[in-house]
Amino acid sequence: MPCDRITTQTVEISNCNKDILEAALKHEGWNVDRTSYGLSFYKAGVSGTCMRDLELRGNVNAADIKRAYSNEVVRQTARKFGWTVKAIGNTGTLARRF
Image (cartoon, rainbow, N blue to C red; front, side, top):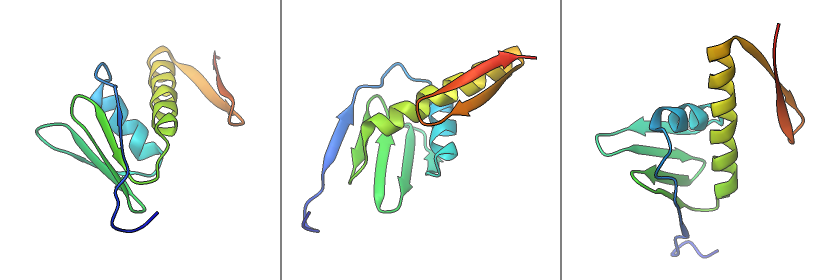
């Protein structure tokens, strides 16, 4: 892609919890800044913002952000109920209580 073009994706994610999204992005290696209007994040030349909707700029897959958010929901819920979470490849996670 030529350097004078910016690819922007808008993802409807208005019902998300910003704290969970921030934790998910940090877990995936993003640098996250919390501002008064929402979240701003960047990694390796790719950036995004999340106010009401999630706007991604650059070559990033929105499905990866959604997957990271879902994984963080599982991690936080497991922590809340005292479960242990184990990753099973890239296809899923296993949560069980000991």
